[in-house]
Length: 435
Ligand SMILES: NC(=O)c1ccc[n+]([C@@H]2O[C@H](COP(=O)([O-])OP(=O)(O)OC[C@H]3O[C@@H](n4cnc5c(N)ncnc54)[C@H](O)[C@@H]3O)[C@@H](O)[C@H]2O)c1
Picture 1 (tube, rainbow, N blue to C red):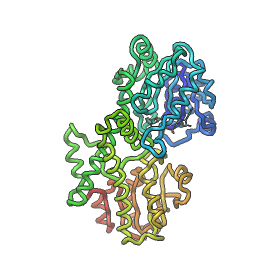
Picture 2: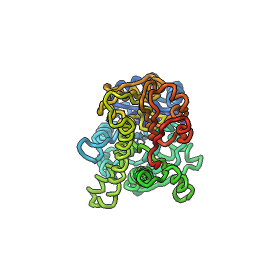
Picture 3: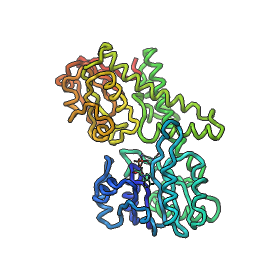
């Protein structure tokens, strides 16, 4: 099928390349000329495992091209809208200006029978409003939320764990479903679960999934706060809770909390939208979920300050990790970057390191100190703090750290190091929620 993908960021670039890899003829369109130049040259504009390979192979097949012109969407049958929906400055609500601009810009290039498919995460009610913009074009609208995880985005796009279509009633809905079935023929042939619903349900599936995941993380982080004042160990608590299959162990790792371009802004946008709908109380708990999450960043900073005896100025601190999670270079609302920036703000001499996220962090916070390697960050540090659980940091041994560091305190902001081994080697190992 002929597809266009409007917006080639973390979601759209992967979607465009993966759809071409699956055999579709795809044009990826973005207003960012630099991004389009990189993608056209087969270079991923961000770090995502597997993306360079699918980009190269899809470009070589001739089925994938990129453009800055929305006019190049003309002739495609299905148009995916994958532009950003960031938090509005000064408000919790989602900023829908990019989604509106993309749909308004597409309208002149739509033909009878085309399908516009929203992939961006939007407040419930957005699809219905956007559908009205297509009146008179002969095109219809579907909402097909995206559940990919950065770090696994290619795999999640090619083999999703479920597909959700939000479609209109009647014949238009049946046609939209048939078109989406064509796009996702391979996944459907592999028995990927499919839920076909109305627009509102499809929109809500995405935001409620993120609300649930954020709540699970903040739940265990709330238990970590209690563990800290009661002497309990939240990691053992999580193991014990996780054996209950109704609860499950995943997303129960206490630490410095969640971040990234989705969870924080999605739970905030959800509370804003619920308030607009007169049901603010239904998701008021998400404000507490957000508050618990942000308190964990304070806690990590406090632990470092305490380890330095309250005297931070000029003291060298190694910050291991900048991305909001491993296997990504995404620093949007990253707890790790936040911790580094705050320690710098307190006067610490911060040596930050991340295998992939340093260029993004340097662009936003050139004032921070960046180290070329984890070893360089650790060299001479009085305290080290692990805030993104990249494998290379998980594998760090206390013996190696001891050779490099000036001090012997490690703050394990992700609870991934073997506390007993670090303590046995003479380190003061401080975890989160561990008594
Ligand atoms: N990143 C993820 O893991 C993920 C997962 C699921 C859903 N989402 C949702 O997908 C959407 C996109 O997220 P992202 O992380 O890819 O954001 P992003 O900021 O990386 O990408 C958005 C892209 O849209 C482009 N853009 C903006 N306006 C445009 C226009 N009018 N025409 C063409 N291009 C335009 C921007 O230049 C940018 O490249 C958001 O709603 C997000 O919540 C993201």
